[in-house]
Structures are given as structure tokens and as C-alpha cells.
Length: 491
Image (tube, rainbow, N blue to C red):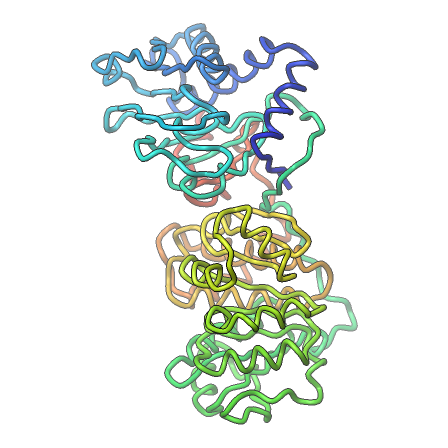
């Protein structure tokens, strides 16, 4: 996994790099990387017109050094010392390099005016973006491509960053980076290890329970159960108020492999004596008004992994005492809010929604807080932070969240480390959608692609097509060469 750093850690890393060689050598390496990526974007450097906007600090020096390399390769390069910019000549450029401000930026920024249609390559961050918080000045110009230098910064994954950084690559400058503390990690397909079931596995080895669906909302239950089965659950028991309606909803998706055991009362869910036989439980998708009562029962009577989604999250926001019950659980608890649910939940629990507040909230509640969006963010109960750039625009479709809940339960039911299981589910989910393309796809199509995603992850080749630039996504995953605006195969 790639490490993620905060601004203080990056400053320490920069100082150690400079001490290990020299600041001039570090800037030269950065300039070479910027120039190389610029040439890639242009399909070659000779005869191409490039404008470099350079600030007063080291970010500007990186840009000036890139200009030197590009000129030596035959490009026609103009360097402008910000804010002195000739906008008429800028319009003639085939590429603009934004090297005004880097990861140390704070305060206000009036923006840069890059003519429409001229691609922008940002050095480390688009100028105006705070690399610590991910918040940007209103006039910040979105980049088409961003080259992160040395290491990923936490602010490149938060807030405004995904919509501003464009296609993003990491260029480490050196073979290894100085040892400093980290703020988190980036999870990628090559980090996922999908293992085969043991030879003595049977359906109850990975059986799950699903408390999902309600009158008029049985589709959510169907997607959750079907995804769990596709993702590795041996059996899924659905507790539903109307088993006949549940069976009809399941038929096209689960082919009769979901059973509906006795035990649902209609006024709420009563724990059955064999509750412990389930290796994971999901509660919430389409569940409606009974979710809060059922979550309370599960919190006290079920010790295994628990996935809390949708209406169950809404129930916590309405009745914060449920969070106290969850905090006393020994088993892994995974909360999966989207943006609106997160805002309501955080407000009810007296928390903010910024990066630091969410990390503290997860630790206080003893839960794994999985925040949907791009990138998907995981705040673990042990205080770790993982960013998972898997959830691209293809998943902007109804029902795909229910699919994720089922996958989470299936992977947690395999046993082992909860953090790894959650990461597996998110990457399987995202990759299944990516195999369908970049346009929004239906939850049914995501379901159908889960076996393909699992097969791909078992032999994921890595992304050598972009070396030495490591693709880390920004507006969407960069899993395959065809998702890049750069023609990497062209020499």
C-alpha cells in the first residue's frame, strides 16, 4: 500500500531528502519527472509549445527545472514568474504547467486564467488547494493531470481535491523515501489478496444473516443477499416481514439460494438461539422503521461482524443511544454512510465531518467508519485511515450501495482482519463497476460482474504502463490504461 502523509510529515521528508543529497539535486529530479510527464501528455516534446507558471518557492523552482529539460528536448517553453503572466501568449500554448504553489500553500489565491481547451498539468497540487485539508480557494483552476511529488498528501484525497486534481500520478523522485510517520494508506487492486476457500469449507462456514427490505423496498434486500452470495457467503438468511414478497424479489437474482427462516415477528426481530452461527450480519438496506429496534437487539446479542447501513444509520442519528450500544460490542462494526447520512450522523453524535473529526469519531465509537464517495474513506476503530480509490462515477446508480453491503458481509464472513476484508469488498465493488465502463451502470450489472472482478483480482498485473509514474486516481480509478487521457502505448 502507498503511504499517505500530512503536511508536517511532508516537510520533514523534504528536509531529509535535501540533507541526504542536496536541494538542487532534489529539484533536478522533480523537474525531470514533470518534464517527462509533460512530454507524455503532448505525445513528445520536440516543437511543442509549453507555458510554465512558476511561483517563488520550491514548487516554482521545480517548474523552472522542468522548463530546462523540455527546452533541451526541443520544446518551445515560456516561463512566467507568477503573477506576471502574458495571457495572450498563454493562449498559444499546447500545455500549461501550474507550478505556482505546492503542498505548503495556505490562505487565499486569486486563481490562474488558463484558456479553455489548453490542458493544465499541476505540480503536486493545483495552486489554491490546501494539501492538508483538501479545501480549495473558489478560484482554483482544476487540473487535467496532477503529478504528486515524493509522497501522497492527505489533502489530495479529501474535500475539493477529487474534482480539482484530475488524473493523478505519484512520482517518488528517489527509489526510497526517508522514514517518517504516516497519516494513512492508499489501497489499490494490487494490494488485495483473494484467497481460495479451505477444502473443508461448507455453506455455514461463511453464512450470513440479512435484515433488509420492507414492504415496497424488497429490492434492497435482494441486492444485498445476491451480492453476499456472489462475494463468497455460503448462505444468506433473510429476515423479512413478508417471506413471499422476499422470495419473489430474490428469484431473478439469487436463484433460490436465499432462505427465509422463522423468527421475524413483524413488530421487530427476535434473536434466534443459533444467532452465533452467522459469521456476519447486515442490517439496514430498505429496512424502514424497525431498523433501530433490531439494531439494539443485535448490539447486545450478536458478537460477530456487523454491517450497519442505510436505515440503520438513520436510526442511530435519530436515537444516539444506539451508538453507545455499538461502542460496547467486541466484534467488528462497520458503518457505511453516504454524504447526507454522514452529516446527520455526525451532527447527532456531536462530531464534525472533517478528516480529523471522523477519525476521532470512529475511535470513540469503536467502529470502522466507511465513508462512501471518491475516494472511499475508511476510518478504523484503531485510528488508522485508508483511502480506497475504487468508487468511480459508474457506481452512481440506485442499488449499488446495497450491493456493497452484501459484499462487506461476505468478505467479513471469511474471517481474518476486518480492515483487509472491508478493503477487499470496496475494491471488488469498484472493479466490478469499472469492468462495465465509466458510465453509470445498474446494480444488476455490478452484481453480474462480481465473479469477473474476483477473477481479475486474483491475478491483477499491476500498472506498469505508466512507470515511473504511479497512477493513484483522482476523479475516478486509474486501473487500466484505457482510463487515462495519456496515450501511454505511444512511444
